[in-house]
Length: 339
View (tube, one colour):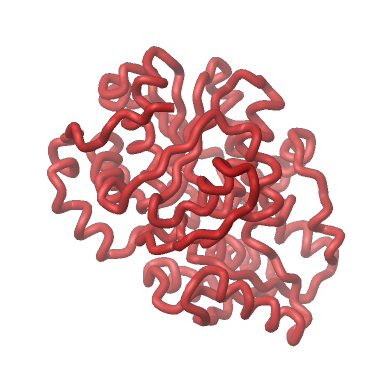
């Protein structure tokens, strides 16, 4: 089944993926927020991928990939994840009646691991990091004869994720700027593929945790690099950039913002104050990235991606203690990003 990974990533394939995705998912809301618009002096919308059944954008790619695997007659699927990707594969596999195994690092977000089990997948906790879990998958895949669904280097995942950007472009055709979180990279790759095929002048900015900045460092260097992944935000906890998405977004991004751990907690609190949505660290990061980019965004039509809501109880407890949670305070410590 390795030929699946050679499948094209394109606007045409994303349009085809939409027919598959719509069999299982409703279109998520694109909501304009007055408070965020005033804060940023821009026309600001949030794309609520956190409203998907699994609480994140990943289910779009999971459904598209697993649907294709089912048609190809595979016996089952195995993947590794920090949570949301694994949950998407587990859920899509349950919907399509395909056995699934998800390997996660030891000590992963308990809310996400519980949801993976509840979706019916076999959960294996192995390895200390995202990459170490990936090494376990390679071994188990060969032993069990399961299709190895890589969390980033899968064209069907990226084309499925691209359907969210089709929705944005159709609902807000005069979009100027898109801000997306970047972990393994499928969402950034999907954003530039879809939006730039529709209108090349749309700016796409990525955001990542400073404590897990392999994709940012790779983008800056123009080559794939590895780095530490010590962030609490599971969606960002990848130790390297990945070949397929990196090859797509490396020359297409307009800029990149990294956020400290403090800023990621502030992002959760700020996102709640302005949108009344409880997002996880990576899911809320686009809001804080926009604060740092506000000079670049002034007067523009801006879409922020709220990519996931599967925060752990510990993350929520810390975020709600911040003044931003109840008063929306943005202080001078959140410096404007000079790009």
